Image 1 (cartoon, one colour):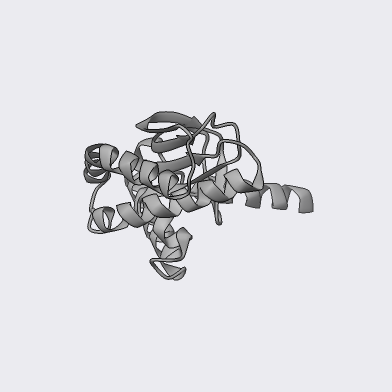
Image 2 (cartoon, rainbow, N blue to C red):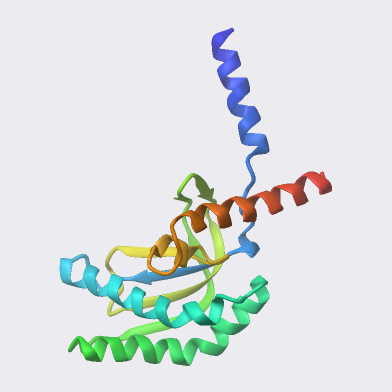
Length: 175
């Protein structure tokens, strides 16, 4: 009886747990050249430069489509920001900045799960891109909340809960 209660409770939670639909978010993905401490640090600092550049452009965004258009329009500038940062660090290493649909494995983002699948993403590959990666969700603006330098940490929880609640309500109304 106790086992079935636990199983039943687990199933119930799974059924009401909102899911992220792949077309609802935009991811940001930075892949380091290698796993050396220097390359990992470079990846994080490059990420900071790009997020600093993107924040004022994405802050007023109200829709996924608007965010996608801004990111696509800004690709040459994002590339320039990344290239300039590498030059200031004395790094002569190739970089590839691209926007597209890329496969991501299932990941947790705090208390939420982002299912495996293809997602629109801004991707930056540094050098041979054989090192550990870093990712976040650009839309809704969770990168900036997670980053913790621009918005207070409670914003992440607010955006996630509000984003997932809206999706959950739409699912309930349709079902």
